Image (cartoon, rainbow, N blue to C red; front, top):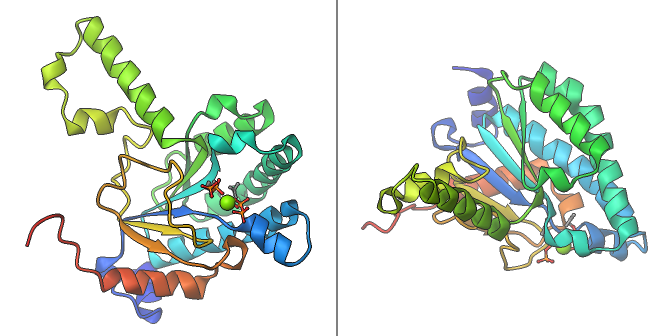
Length: 247
Ligand code: IPE
Ligand code: IPE
Ligand code: MG
C-alpha cells in the first residue's frame, strides 16, 4: 500500500474508488471579500491559498488529475484592474509553487486560449510545464482564458480543415475524434465537478467533457474551501451510484 492510500484511508475514503479526475469551478472570491468590506482582489488573494490546499489535498489522497477553472473567456469582460490583479496573482502563484510541483512530482498543464494571456504569465507557465512534463504524480490542469464553446469551435475548425484537405472523411468522425481535438485530449473526462459559491450553473466550463460527471455544488465561497470540505465531498461522491444510463 502506498502513502496516498494511507492518507485516503485515514480520511475515511476508499482509495480504490476515488474520482480519477476532479474539476473545480472556484467561485465566490468577490463575495468573500464583499462580506468583509474588502476589495475583490483580496478575495482572489485568499482564493490562491485555497488553490494550494486543493492541490495538496488532491496529491496526498491520490487523485490523478485536478482541473481548476481559474479564468474564463467571459472573465476578460471584467474591469481591467481586476484582470491585471488576477494575472499578477497567477504569476505569483506559479512562481511560488514551482518548487512544490517539482518536489511532489506534479505535472502542470494549461487549457484555454493561452495565447491571450500576458507574455510574462505565458513564460512562467511554459517554463513550469516544460520542467514538470515528465512528472508522474498529480496532473494539475489550469483552465486559463478557457471557454467550453470556444474549445468546441476550435475543434470544429480543425476537423473541417482536415476534411476539406481530404485528410479525414466526415463520416469517420466519432466521439473519440471529437475528444481528441479538445484541449483535454490526453485527460479522461472529469468524474466529479465541484462548484463553490452556490451558483447552479456551468458557466461555459468543460461542456463536452462533463457529460457524465457527478455534480457537487456547495455554498462555501472559494476562499473558505478547505481539506475537510473536500474530503466530505469525496465521501459523498463515493456514495453515489453512477449508472451511465444503464440499470
Ligand atoms: C471566482 O470568484 C474567481 C474568478 C472568476 C476569477 P469571483 O470573482 O467570480 O467571485 P464572485 O462570484 O464575484 O463572488
Ligand atoms: C466561473 O465563475 C469562472 C471561474 C471560476 C473562473 P464566474 O463568476 O465567472 O461565473 P458566473 O459569472 O457566475 O457565471
Ligand atoms: Mg463568480
